[in-house]
Image (cartoon, rainbow, N blue to C red; front, top):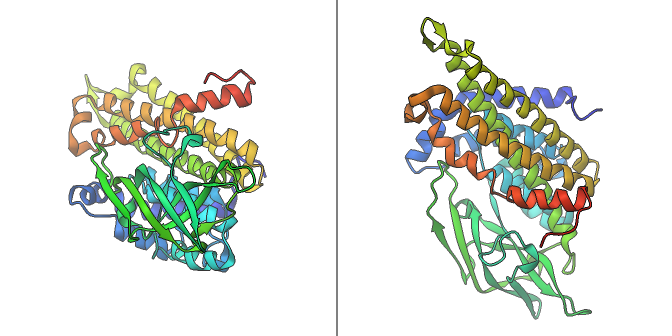
Length: 386
């Protein structure tokens, strides 16, 4: 089936999730953030309806779908004004990596909780001195008998206060070559030597960001997910879904902002005519609609390629989707504010709160500049710039 024609099952999933999102809506989301609470009610209801586990294998309590199904869930919730960032981290990144590379015992231990919403896991890759260069990660794991000893630090790690474990990207020494290679460890958040500090962020989001410190954290041998010398393949098995999910969240946010702008432009009258009748208002909104559709097609292509196991092509498409979606999310929120005029900066209209979050999609999980570097080098064959 062509990627631009979603299955009947996925369209039905979208409609059902959209209904759930509208049941809660932006008023619930903003009230939750204002009160310092988590979106527990929405999370639990989404779990009970099977939406959190749509991409978890059926034998571990999930729906047996693929990343495109989970991306549809996040997009529809975001389009209803309830973007759930932990959907990106827990089911998409950690769930995908564990399902693909974990042992049977690890899958049985960690996947059912994702599927039924009773467990949440965070993901830690970014380091203060590594940034976008994952080759410079310094968090290091060494053997101590059958255990691992983990030392290092991470920053801008989402949802650690809600997670029982963080899937940490560290490095181990290849005994054959002496070189350091990426390895993944499930680290309990209550482990000795594991500490966290919240980072103050200007985001309207129930999910918090943290800096992590790992000081001689002792882990059992089975905390290692996958192979000790798995290299980058295992890591990017989680990063491609991350980009697909971030793109879907950004698309949902863009749809939400566009809907608000269109409704305002249709009903707000100045000089006896709706402001949407003026091309200066209508054309930017029409352009955003086109850009949303283009970003959705790229995201669906990336999800389809990932599901077909064409990981190289999926990586290219996922990066392009994330770029396109991040750009249109920023433009959509900005244009919605402009359409509302002064009302766009009034909290009661719900748009100004989305400014920082929409801007984040240009920066995380990879900046648009690094995406352009990747496309220039990998897709166009241009020489490296760094």
